[in-house]
Image (cartoon, rainbow, N blue to C red):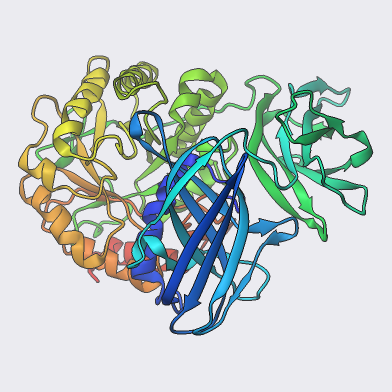
Length: 596
């Protein structure tokens, strides 16, 4: 699963997910979300290039209804060695996303200057998002997508030179965070940043309100235009305004501070930057090891057993939990640690609440590059694992993507080294290693299989009894390739499939692997409405006997991950979202030994 999105700019890992999720959600969920899709009789695109930007003009004629929509352009650039790269831009101005009125059978001209990096652009995909109030857009509700329509990707023959043009004010971190102890035992925190404004930018207020948000609350700072400094590089068409955010009283902990710029018409509406300041206060005194951990398990003859050979009972608190269905229930804590070192509800009390509904394991995806480079980040990932184990659950740790490198073989090499680092750190502990979230570099099982073997062997060379999970190839959607040629050279405890599919396709994609004797986990599924989740639970429940485990995405709250299943957390328990409640209901049903 991919990272959380921003209106103006998106993290690259999450953007790749959006490409897949958009295709799926339009086809399966647009009607289910009570937002009628828009059909177009015409969509024409013309683009004019300039230095660092391009003027996009789209002539859009709806065929079935009028609509208020926001628009997103997804442009494809030819990257190194011909690999496609993407830039995303939601049409907006200084006051927020632009809303366009589409009128039935009438052409509407949509124009927007889009900032683009240097390169050759080959195609453009256009998505329309629902606007209920004519002021904001709901990016969970796509009402039209060229990528999943007859229009397809629209061709571009576009070359952009020069630096990316700044169209709206932006904010960046600028320098080292300064932390100083106070006489009261706490700390002061000062975070330097700078606001960038286009050279010609004007504002009657004489400046821009900015904000920083972290564990210490939200602080605001006014960036005065009179303090703006022109950039020395003549190719850069903006000025910068140095600012500082000051938190007067901070306790020892890990901090992840987000910075942003307020809208001119509403200073309380802040557009948060994707850049964060991550740091620790008070050394490592914030770290907590689990006082007790669950016993190590492995998979043997398609059964969970204790690593020392004993019998494993995953549901002593639910005696009937495995009488109707045999598969273990788990979940995903998501990938929010890819973008923040302080994800919400990272504590044993929250994970115990999840255990109480029948969850026995939780997967956390992390940033591979940060893990290799930053000791603080390693400790943050470890603290999540410690908190999960403290609740009596098994943590699954998984790199979100391959580490970055100049070539695919180098990425594989770094991934193998990462497995060795993890195995050395957790040797003998009840950690489950998921070698990679989704191996999108390898879209065929025959090319992914030998790489997976290398990564599993790297772990087992250090910890022979480790619990190791191998995802299916590509986006981990299809288990049929592995069914025909399983990994036999080294033990695999579970094979993992990510079922973002129509419920009717679940058996086709995963039953062959189960029937071939592979220990299969459906490690991700989710999205849509409650009815979709009920249909998915039923389809998974009806897979052939032998399915080992399931884990819907994601047992986090809104704002931490896309497709959150938990709406809120109180001392008394959990409140679930529309998609989360059917999952909780089905878990409760299975715990009672009943089927849907």
